[in-house]
Image 1 (cartoon, each protein chain N blue to C red):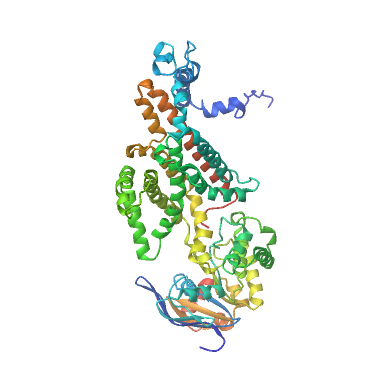
Image 2 (tube, rainbow over the protein chains, first blue to last red):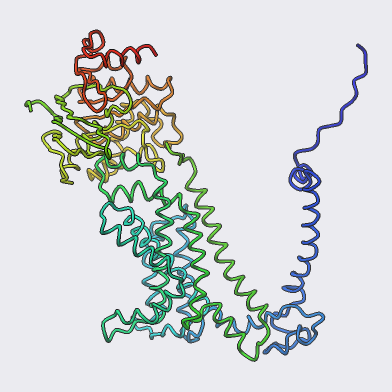
Length: 377
Length: 247
């Protein structure tokens, strides 16, 4: 009866940093082994990449203090043992990367367009923005303003699109392609599910044809064949031709993504809308599409990111987007051999935009799901 | 067709593929009449009431609702749907809209009612179904019984002359059935023309003017509740009643 009770060890910590480490990194011996391996890899890689990109890198001057004007002056070419990245190539060619060959005295027009793009995106990013309605109206008319601002008109001198390049072309193609393809994709998706055989057949044909053809083929099609379909005397701008091809391509994919969302909507939703006397369009715009699009946000963003990166293909029809300018720079004898720096920079710019898009989609999903049971009933 | 008939089905036939779901169905419903339709599952009772607002299309015979014949004419269909409200087994509320928006949507967009007026109307309907405090919640936050009452309020907001109920309590937990039935009884006492497909025989006894029993796509028996429950004619009805009342 009076036996001494052995004192027990305290329970293993499950909270705090130690607890977190134990649960997530050292839960059992395989887990610990993997953790140690990963730490070893990071230890090898991180200091090296930081050193190469930042600590030993040249930005404007090399280690002798000279301003770099060609690849021979880069520290890593002068002293291969110690030099890091030579970012001077980006510094010197920065204008081209961002604006292409847009005339310097007119470049304010591109800058204003970039600022306006940011303002136009604001109401989409921040739902609690004061005066959001006014901002939204601006978002709708922004493409028209940007078109005249960049292209010319209303007293502004015309700047031919073959002078556009770099990030400007990438953004014009990406934004216009995504923005135009979305409504067209919605109509195609509705059309494909239409009960009218002519409409659904036309949509199926269009979608299947476009999806069955590589984007490069469509780009050539836009460049070479589109002018044949236009009445004589009308010359279509090269960038516009590419835009048409990109938009058609993207809208076919968008249509399939949205159709997937539409199929997830229970028939009861259609019946309830119908029994309230709503018309076909009213029902789709108020009831069906808001739910279908909500479900399809991840794949919509996925295809949008895909398109944004695919815009680099326009290089083969002679447009110089961000990557095109990079490759052009590499072909310059002054900057031969700096491919690491240039591809790193181009990748980084693309990553910033696509990562932004993917974070935005996560935010949208979170926001739209609050308090809503999207289950079957 | 008698003068008072507000719904009239004559020799209605319908097939799903080769399956003959409705076979020569004849039904006359007078204004303010409350009809309860029952029968085993697969007997065509849901299909029949879904034909009345053209969620299903009948292939032979005629259906006339409030003087409007249901044909392929889309305008007629829209007009009938404005007259006829419907409540579904699965509620079918719009999950992306709040309770209030669920109710105001159709008055605003179909009847072109100003938003403020529609919101007043929505609140009045929510008072009728006794859940005005839920106006700003989303359907997913409500219990099944509350959702079904919102669905009833949503239909009533269109001010229909006829209400169709397609097994309104079948998807509910037992303790929630009563709150929905209470609302329906109130509605019946208010003089609404109602066709209710249900297995709630207690509700049928208190509310129905006439019972309709369907089996295998046909109307087997039509009678007032007293006769239907105490003295049914057909053997099929007797068997069904014995099964359903001895649950």
